[in-house]
Length: 202
Image (tube, rainbow, N blue to C red; front, side):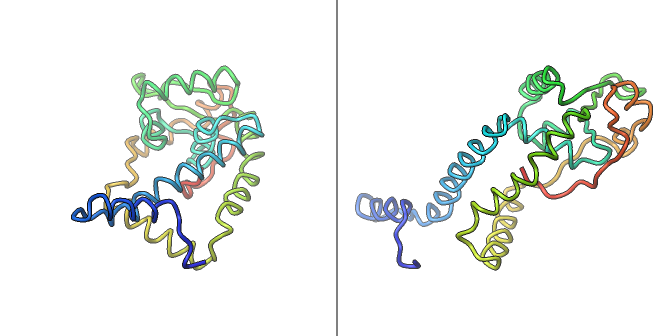
């Protein structure tokens, strides 16, 4: 298995012949990360489609589900989803139409908007989460537990070197809001039970 050749090996070999003076060794990492991302993303999209969700829909639902108090301000949600505020607004509008999220202005700060799951949004997120995690484990079945731990550590090191760190903008007071007032105003019941913000699983 260690002697197997993948598509990136072929690309590097072709460059060695076409431009032998250029060091393309970084392609060994970047090319594989890119190709793996595309393959994993495609598999995740196919899985989620079977459960009636677009990948981005589950991304938003999962991000809100693991957030403290099951709510986030739009700015933090935009950063977590790695999409522009304009694109996020369109996505939230879509999820509002589906009855999966609700949004409301922050108490005392009308310029800040919170987003939270509705009861149906929480149900959908919880219903898909366990099966989604099992599907991700299946996709990584070619690696041992040790391989996965090593790869995760190396990718964490790479991401940190590229500046990918959590950047939450809402203040603790803003994020907490009025647990009973917000839930009642939005009709979501979002304040009923919160979860600790966890890993960035999809």
